[in-house]
Image 1: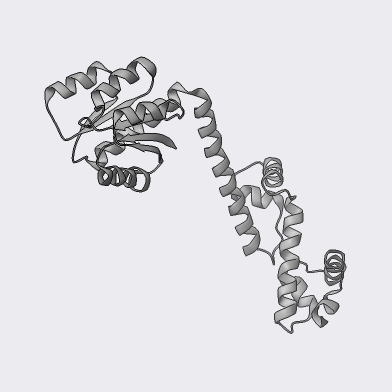
Image 2 (image 1 turned 90 degrees about the horizontal axis):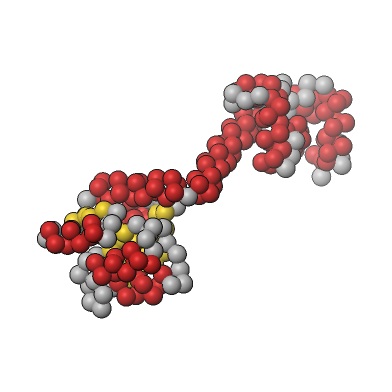
Length: 246
């Protein structure tokens, strides 16, 4: 998430820019919205941001003067100029103070998205810790997707013989790694989760059907009726028949 400080004196434009960045381009958090350069300088004394996007012509302190001060106080902070004025003098001054980019109003969404993407890449390149966090977040998301897939496989095969090796093959992982990953992500062993889901299915069938207990056991993945009844009582505290009578 790239944090952006917006500096624009027209509140409607500022709000529109915020919406464009956060909801259309995405991956951006607008952490502050200032109406001129002086407010932005004051805000930065007690707050931080990854980049600044600013207009040029503003009262109190314009964008170019703000850039001059920022280049002295925060030389690594990227500043993107957005202006309705294509005058060469503005562009030259912006380059003098190392503007990250210079965009003309009305801003082209695709062009702005390219600038935002470059700012993100520069942030990760210059901040190894941030890159590590982003990488870890991506890895964590992939692992959660794997666990979701495994749970879906279990739920759709409760009446069948499901082995750890079978599940590992479906998600292209080593079976030992999958077992450890499932425990880490859910707090349960895979076998415990499988038993829980099978017993939940059996309880549902006992409550909603008149099928024989042995048939419910088979539909829940337990072809051995005696084992099913013994396991059900161990988990639930009642025999299947007692549970149904309740």
